[in-house]
Image 1 (cartoon, helix red, strand yellow):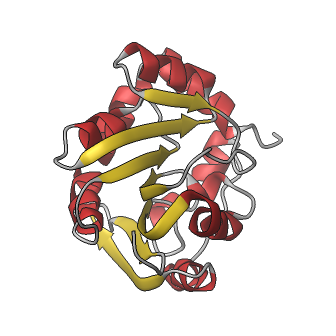
Image 2 (cartoon, one colour; image 1 turned 90 degrees about the horizontal axis):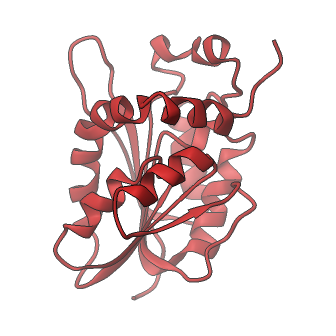
Image 3 (cartoon, rainbow, N blue to C red; image 1 turned 90 degrees about the vertical axis):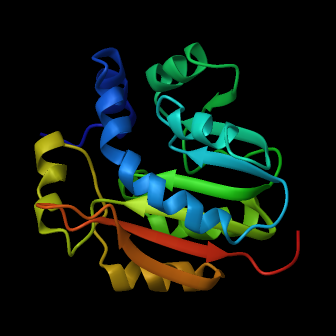
Length: 207
């Protein structure tokens, strides 16, 4: 079967309330990632969640001290519909990587989005150049990567394209995109799961 568009799959999941399982399944990893990323920022901050799903990370950020704005963007129309129904936040239905925000942010968060792109490393460069303020931080998590052998057949099971990169390739991609203070670590480890690969990087300059 030819690759389906990932946004189609996620819209189907939203209609079946599988977004709730995604939220609970990723909560532990995101719960480790966000404090690390936020520790790199000083003072009030704005944030955008790329591939926001039902908006749950935006709602977490809105409750975080110092957050002045939390925006979400997703290519799935049904996911965005759910996000808008659960709060008053700012959510955009848009296809990525073509879409660009009208402003830049202190923090860009993304979880389980990048590897669905044909060229995720160019998206890292776009985030660095067009999405982040100087001194801003990117935190990105992926569960599908070369060292997570359990994830390597996901693409076949879903008939969706996934770009499989190693930990080293993701790290080099962050560096090539221009990020400094790059850190790559595994978070959310538990029995039977090798962990989410979490990437952190800062854009040079001062906010």
